[in-house]
Length: 255
Ligand SMILES: Cc1cc2nc3c(=O)[nH]c(=O)nc-3n(C[C@H](O)[C@H](O)[C@H](O)COP(=O)(O)OP(=O)(O)OC[C@H]3O[C@@H](n4cnc5c(N)ncnc54)[C@H](O)[C@@H]3O)c2cc1C
Image (cartoon, rainbow, N blue to C red; front, top):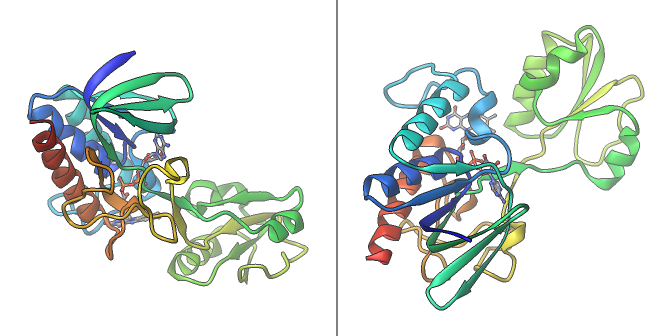
């Protein structure tokens, strides 16, 4: 079993910023990523509030941050973390492929789109279900589609799809899916990727890992950074700031 000083779960902006700080403190660091590095921002074409790189695309920004973390010595493995246990002062992080040992763990799993209800999934039948209009909208050029959701993300998806689809229906959570729609775009909020931590670390009723600005969790040696933490503002700069804080705290914890 390979051992690292720090294991970070999630290669979004929080996890990769943490990796930069841990590596620069001369500690060994493994970042586990279940999908592709970069996190939820990679499909955004233009970011206007990331300081110093006005209008950068999510993919470009995250590729630069990833390259920086790797150049500084972070190791990245594309594996899904499915469990964490603590014995004495060591943590075992279990993935779908391996088990790794660490002296400290940083949780940075972010959030994922809330899934369509069972009723609407059944109603959608064989129609395509998408959680990202900018990723999949072009597939439905000239065809009728439906957007499910009531918030700002739904409004954004509708505006985007209006330039592509022949018709954009708009319905709310649990409304019946309109017959002519060939694809269903879901925009009903996001949920934290923390299911695998149940009973290991304290979470709030929505599944966010409970921590304050110091990023300490209920388990000594486990820190949390970014959108999966209880906090009021979920943005790139706040996730990145958490990455720095959690890494500094983890390094201090290790001594
Ligand atoms: C459409 C959209 C547009 C946005 N636009 C902006 C913007 O313009 N400006 C701004 O500041 N913010 C924006 N945000 C918010 C911003 O993207 C987030 O605040 C930020 O990405 C959170 O970073 P994170 O690292 O905490 O989580 P994430 O980016 O969600 O990264 C978490 C990573 O962890 C991985 N992961 C999850 N579970 C596991 C597991 N069990 N094992 C291994 N890996 C796992 C995920 O695959 C993911 O790669 C936007 C968000 C969206 C969805």
